[in-house]
Image (tube, rainbow, N blue to C red; front, side):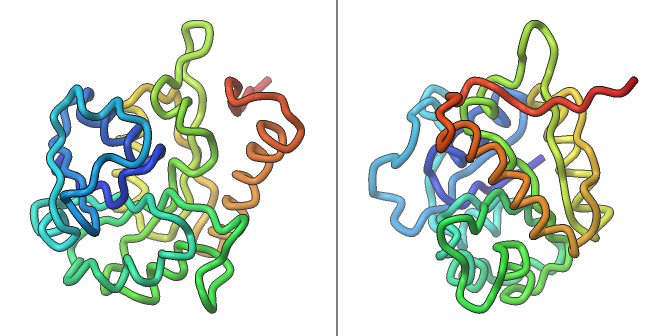
Length: 205
């Protein structure tokens, strides 16, 4: 797939690198392509190109948004015509919320012309995006959104980079819930000081 990653922080960098490693064609879309990489620098080994947001969107069929939550509205408005493109929101409005919205995916939907917006890759730390394998087995990912096309693509990308399953969290009405699920990981990992090297795994009897 041709994928634009908007934002070059830790999550964007981790996803860009692992998706590129999985064989996808990836480009970064950033506000200033001349600025140095902001997050973990593992993506440089794949020589992933940087360009403007508009150019990255034009080159791609799938757009992954990984910017601070408070920038969600501005970024969505900068995407241009995305009517036939899938947008995957990796953000969480935990510390900061987009103006007028309880979550980032609703902010994106309200400020661009794509209806294929889903939330995925937001429920764990970037370390688990780089390496989702624990004791020889992939951990689980989760996706929320009403778009069948968006869910199908997010699920496939999850499997491509090593997650064992990508469970359906529900429709657009579950955007807020999946962000709260992400906060559970943040709470245990950072606030309760369990560290970042652990993950969610759904186990069935």
